[in-house]
Length: 340
Image (cartoon, rainbow, N blue to C red; front, side, top):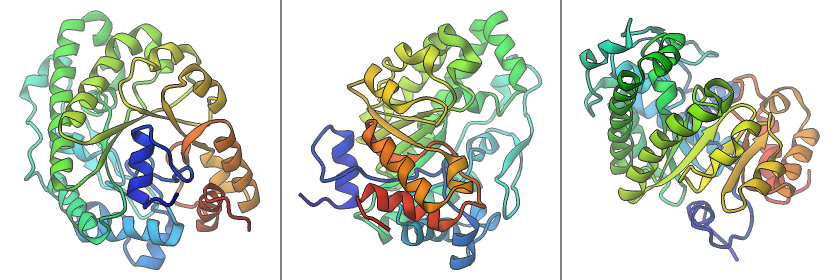
């Protein structure tokens, strides 16, 4: 059995047989635009965050130079926040963009926020980059990355103020989350229309460790599922990345509608797969190992993830721009069953 990169990944998402485990890095929080790729392509941060051709070509560079079997944009988690009024520092060659100024002082002010539109300059850059990638590599899965609803909410107001509002002013906080989620759905649909095949939702601020099991189940899961439903209704596929230790919310993860759950290295992959046998588990090669380890150790970790049940091989979380390209290639070779 031989699959194209796109067919292989979509078959995994649909529960169909494949010739081997795909190896990907979605983009967004989990991107592989390392310094070696920037040097080789001449497409560097921060320009690649604000130029659609540079964004697309850098993503293609990751695929061609690292062997990753997808392309994905953007390279950060600030596009939606900026479109909703946050002040953003665009970063440097070695640091990602970050929110520098929250547009909200109090959660009640959310009604004053603008909505995301396709002509907001950074939104339009991402959409055009997706169009370029779709045209250049139609047999490679194009992944559009959006910020999870809790993480976006805490990019618009000081996080502790939001978490307090969930407890003290739940009705207001949930109306704010409705607004945030509706805007994420708009962005996700625009990505699909531009040519994305898959939407990856990363919510590092919406973990069980931060929210606790009850709030994770009652707040994070329903809003993520609302996005997943909208993506699937638009003929796309959804994946969800949840950071942190998952032991306290393993039962709740089964309530996520996404067929794929991406986990980081803090949680044993075998345990998650045993608890969620019907889910495709993505991960979970340590990002510390990818940066600091040898290719041989990376290959061993990758093979271990596959043996423990990874249906999609991927880094455990966002990797450092200092990560050696050879370590990325070692992970890819392991997925293909190749020896050094």
